[in-house]
Image (cartoon, rainbow, N blue to C red; front, side, top):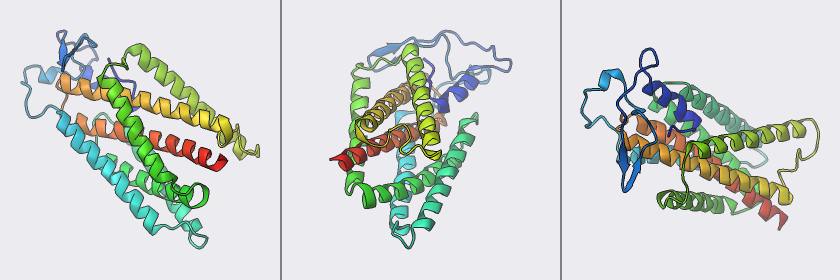
Length: 284
C-alpha cells in the first residue's frame, strides 16, 4: 500500500509515474520475512530508466534506515541537550531563551515543509530540521521541568520509547494491519485532531482562558492520550513504508526519507506524552 505519511506520499507517487504519469511495471509480489505482500499492482519505486537495472548496492536496506534514523535522532538529542544547558529559562534569560526556541521551532517547520515538497531527500535539510527541532524541544522540556513538573522529561522520554517499542511489536506480530482503510482513517483522525488544536489556540489567543480545556484535567489527559494513539498509528504507517521500501528495492536515498518521517513521528509522540504527564503531575 502507498503510505499516507505526508512526507512520503508525494515522493512515492512521483517515483511510480513515468514522464507522462502512465508508466507501469509488471505486477510484483514482494515477500518480507514470512509475510508476502500484494499491496501494489506495480513496483511503486520503479521508473522507465531503471527497468533493466539489477538490484544491488543502490537499493535501500534496513541497515541504511537504522543508521540514518539514528543520525537524525542523534542530531535532535544533541541540540536538545545543548539548548537545555546553554539556554537557561531563569528570569534573567527567559526572553532570550524563548526567542531562540521560537526561532528554532519556526526554522524546523520551514525546513520540514521544504523537504516535504521535494521529490528527493536532501540530507542537509533533514539534519537541519532535526537540529532546529532539538533546540525547540530542549527549551520546552527545560521549561516544563523547571516550572510545571520536575522530572517529567525523563518519564516522557521513557514513555516515548515504550510507545515506540509497543507499536513495533504490534506491527511485527501483525496485530496492527496497515491497509488503505487504516491509513485513511488515521489521516482523517489526525486532521480532526490538528483542527481542534488550532481551534484551541484561537480560543486561547482571543481571551477564552484555557481555550477548549485541552491543557488540564481529565479532558486534557484524554486529548493527549488520543494524540499518543495517533502518533503510534503514524509510526505503524512509517514501519510499513520502510518495509515496502526494502521489499521493492527502493533507491538508497529512501533511507533519508524514512529517517525524516520516523523522526517527525517520534517528536509528535514525545510531545503528546509530555503533555499527558505534565497534566497528570500538575493535577495530582
